[in-house]
Length: 244
Image 1 (tube, rainbow, N blue to C red):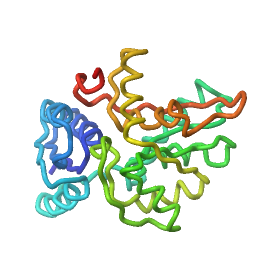
Image 2 (image 1 turned 180 degrees about the vertical axis):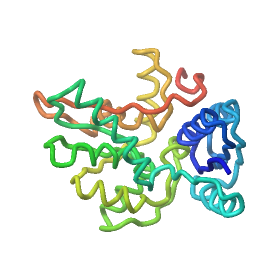
Image 3 (image 1 turned 90 degrees about the vertical axis):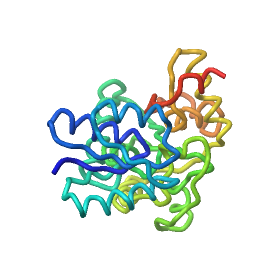
């Protein structure tokens, strides 16, 4: 019966790739905010793409309805132990390259990547700092409320960091690891995208540039001799959008 998932785009790419490798059908539900660059890549991997609703949560609702009809294996984009564990392997890579890392800056949409990183470094002494856009910040809102809450989603990174509510499993992992929360302005994210291009010739989508934006904008200021790792995740955007 194949694989099915809701995604802003990047998770959908991964699920579509796995479906192609396994030779099974793949169906990916994305919101209208997903960039054409992501949607086109998913289709090229052979998956059926359904563009449904304005934001991720709308696509997720449609995905769940379709899954009941097909019986396909639903792979959640963030609130699932397997997704979290897979993302957490990036922590291993960081630790191998930077054994003395003090701090990891990581962006958050629904919490899959960040909670995986937090779980990996939990109890190690390495600090995990979650960075979100001011316009889409479900973890920051949950920290203020003391529990997951619904938030309004908007801004330049809404396609990949646009969950209305942090996942329950993700929330538990981040809280257990004492992860910190900071937010950055959309302008800082755009500036980070341009800086990646001008200084490194890297095309980085808004969600991927969010963690670096905290460092370059001065929202996060490292202490003297602090070793900081910044996770840059996602290049699925129109290259023209980062060069102007």
